[in-house]
Length: 157
Image (cartoon, rainbow, N blue to C red; front, side):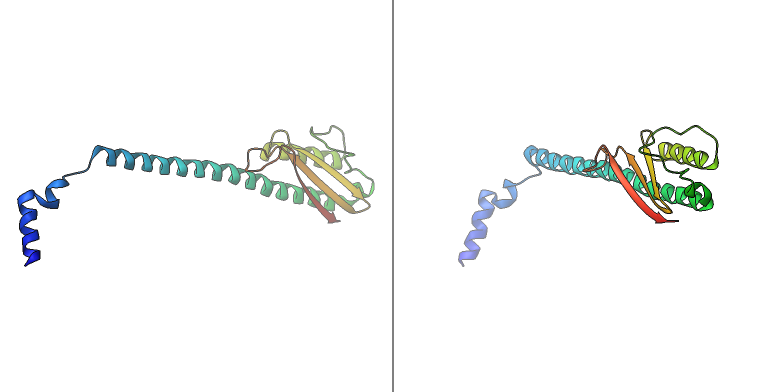
């Protein structure tokens, strides 16, 4: 019987149904703010992913181009034996000069600057036929990237 009295009292006073009609402006404002924050977070995540994807692309291209110069050196072992591929330090501009080794290095430096970064530099150091190739470029756009990112690969030719 007590339950029956509660329902009658709720009908007389309007009950819970009349107290809540529609959505208040504050609730709409809060939901719009939350959706906006979510979309901004998604946009920031997308921008970060694009930056890191570019850094990954540059590292992959570095590996491919370094293997390319190793292949050119294997094809010209006389130039390797005559120290024609030793750059003596970082080379940031394509070298001038005749000979297959200079042509290979010039092409390699040009490819580095075209495919990785305009300021990319290369270094080739051979001790006999054990060669080390280094590539340096500005990778500061990537997350935790450095302004002088260096990749080093070694090969026995």
